[in-house]
Image 1 (cartoon, helix red, strand yellow):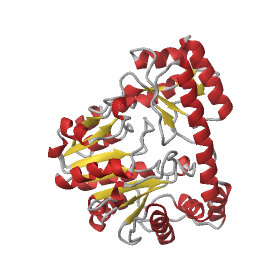
Image 2 (tube, one colour):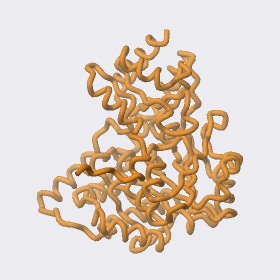
Image 3 (cartoon, one colour):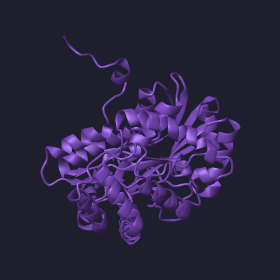
Image 4 (cartoon, one colour):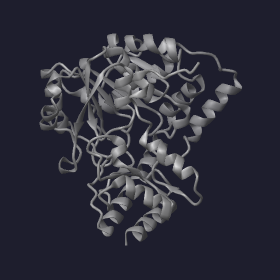
Length: 381
């Protein structure tokens, strides 16, 4: 007997990012600008809290929704940073990474056949998540002409007025684009007018360089129709601890928790203790990492300008999204990897609007980053 994957799974291609990782793993002297993972370690205080929790034998499940102490701290932190109030008992869910939160939300609020608009280019998991939930993904392309910001023209051009939900990610992976409060206002008005549920992935909110982050949930009439996702992977460099959270109305969080309790049961206990410490004492570490990323961001944008490679001024996350020197971005990325041993990801891995671009992560040390940029310059000269 041969076990055949379901048709739903068969329709989803392998991740375009993963393919380049696998190619890079086969080579020596590789500098990877492809991975979306901080090169920093988690702050020592957070790591020590995780170690202490293990030494004390705190290795059991927690409440499905996460430890109440952590949920209270999350609610307090979000209120302090973004002026958003959530009830830690009914409106906060601790998840196994923000990615689990997005997956839970899609499965909790989408019925088979529902249409889910996905801003693109965007993180590679959104469209597969919609398909796995039985929904129909509707791409909403953004372009460099509008600095990869979402506009109501783009929503109408894609036919989003007939959709059921909209997935946002600002600051954006892979473009590094952000949106201000005034730029989000017409998007919120559109969502209210057309009764859209908004799933807002704000995992990079602490990595905004040009202006303070604005959550779309803070705009009038949006809190009740928005589920916000965030976590500890990017700002606190805790990717491997896999801890995120979702914020939303009680009915949405309750439905998500119903799935969560049958799949994850609860997020990793050790990671929850690390997250508690991170929220209590690691603001300075986050600020220092953000300062280092900003230095690298400015270097990358400056070097691409010197090379004559057009790259709009990314203002968030830790990605630049330059135009590919070749028309075929995938061919360029493969040749660069083969000849100069520098890994970048072609923009096509992130959906419509990514054609002809490259995702360049600057979440790598300054020495390696400078060497990688030197190799890119040598390759195109």
